[in-house]
Amino acid sequence: MKNDYFYVTTPIYYVNDKPHIGHAYSTIIADSIARFKRLSGYKVFFLTGTDEHGLKIEKEAVSRGINPKELADSVHIKFKELFTELGISYDRFIRTTDEDHVKTVTSAFEKMSANGDIYLAGYEGWYCTPCETFLTEKSLEGGGRCPQCGRPVSKVKEETYYLKLKKYEKRILDYIENNPEFIKPDFRRNEVLSFVKEGLEDLSISRTSFRWGIPVPGNEKHVIYVWFDALLNYLTGIGYEDFLNGKNPDFERFSKSANHVVGKDILRFHAVYWPSMLFSLGLEPPKIVTAHGWWLQGGRKMSKSLGNVVDPVSLIKKFGPDPLRFYLLSEITLGLDGDFNADNFITRYNSGLANDLGNLISRTAAMLNKYTGGNIPGSVSAGEDDEVLKTVRRILKNIDRRYDDYDFAKILEDIFGFINIANKYINDSAPWKLNMDDLEQKKNLLKILRTVTISIYYISYLIYPFMPETSKKINAILNIPPFDAPGFSAAPEDIAALCGKLFKDGFRIAEKIEIMFPKIKPEE
Ligand code: MSP
Image (cartoon, rainbow, N blue to C red):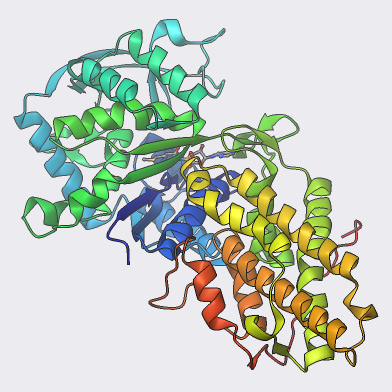
């Protein structure tokens, strides 16, 4: 077990409406990295959940004729259900209405206030309710629209508490400049840098014109601004209250290792406002903030108000979770936008999953059953084809770095490249032409069978973070426990030794072989 800590989070999702593909995407990214790190032996904490306060939720509840808590109670379940269907391995699903979170927000506000970082003054400006963002006059787009979502903004004139962001400007700038890994991808890092260099304004962190939020301690006329409340979920999730009481020795190790996965629209909150809040609390900024792009439909961001959302639940019901996980992670390079296209989904499923991966497994299992009665030939009697295996060894060698770069599309490209090599190896060596009664040919046949079987083992290991259900099915065929079996971990550098120990002479595959990834006909 590595003694390293790894804390990964998704954004917490607004409960004004049920989840769509965009929300599934942030969560699948975080899940894949959490699974990889856990498998490699890290102490992982994976947090996701729902953002339940604020004007946007209050308005939606009013329009449905219910109170905001009732809305949150019903919608947060939709997220939980989706995450269960998607196989999301979170350690906690946090809700901002949870009691410990309300306590965290209250004590954080008090602490920042005591540090002299919060003051009361007047605010006059603009507010975009769908984005829950304060906007200056000069940032508005033509016709008084929000520069982020293009929707009309409202005028706000009220008393508000401010957080002294300006005070932390220099520290933020230094942190970004001294830690090139902090904001990913690089082009986003440059955007944030120029934003900070233009100069920061103090941030309004309370509202008085509605009630649905956590009250400001000592002045209940104000509710705390939803983003101030929401960002603190990252501290609640790993036990901030216990930490304050000296009862949480792991807290700082997790908080220092924080990896926040976010969409590009909310990067500034995580890369500028959040570190300032942490500085004010005497804590360190997160280690990494990774901003992914958007899923589009017809060239526009998928969103409820545009009516162009793709429902992940119907896709999972039809094809299971893994094809969707595979498609979302392999189709676009992290950071860029991509168009969700049903034809493309089907093409990728049929070629990558049905033809290449599914076929490799079923033909290998069929050959083992036919030629050796299901026995996996041992390395001493059969040998292994290094020419084939060297490709996968190279992938394993580079994999840590690729994960550090969040380069999932490339990892999957490498894995599927190797799947093609294994299939080609079978085609070229044509084991069905070999004669089991000829000693030399038999030896060759056993070598081919062993090589492809352990190739499949490596493939199962490599795809586990992306397609855990498929990996589990492959392991069931190989007659070994799944990679998330309790207590199991194996770093990429250890997996070859493990493979050698596992598949010795006399080891048999399972008798029942399940067909994976039946082909989709385009009319489906
Ligand atoms: N509640 C805030 C986040 C607070 S985190 C402390 C929020 N919620 S959200 O529900 O609007 O969005 C959550 C995440 O979903 C964001 O990372 C956002 O980028 C992502 N997506 C929402 N629509 C999306 C697409 N169409 N495509 C990809 N992801 C997008 O913001």
